[in-house]
Amino acid sequence: MAQWCETCDRPVEGDVCEVCGNEVHEEVREPMPWMWRFFIVSSVIYLGWRLYQLISWLSHRRF
Ligand SMILES: [Zn+2]
Image 1 (cartoon, protein in one colour):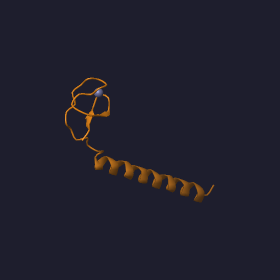
Image 2 (spheres, protein in one colour):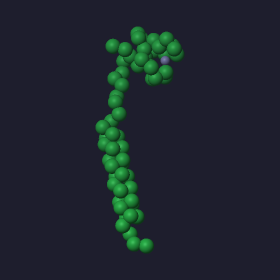
Image 3 (cartoon, rainbow, N blue to C red):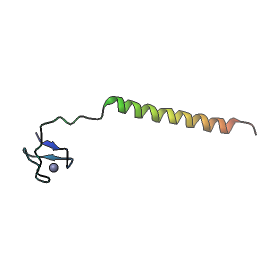
Image 4 (cartoon, rainbow, N blue to C red):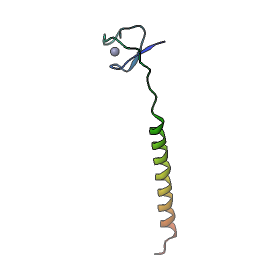
């Protein structure tokens, strides 16, 4: 299993990064937390809904 150099942001084969020379520690690279995904998705949906409302309001209002 390849390890990850946090400094270079690249996978490293072995214990020492061949680019920066830092020792890499065995760490599980955490994926983006699901709360963040949920927040982003709900923001997009909310903004889309508000945009739809705005367009609907603009097209239906009387001048
Ligand atoms: Zn490195």
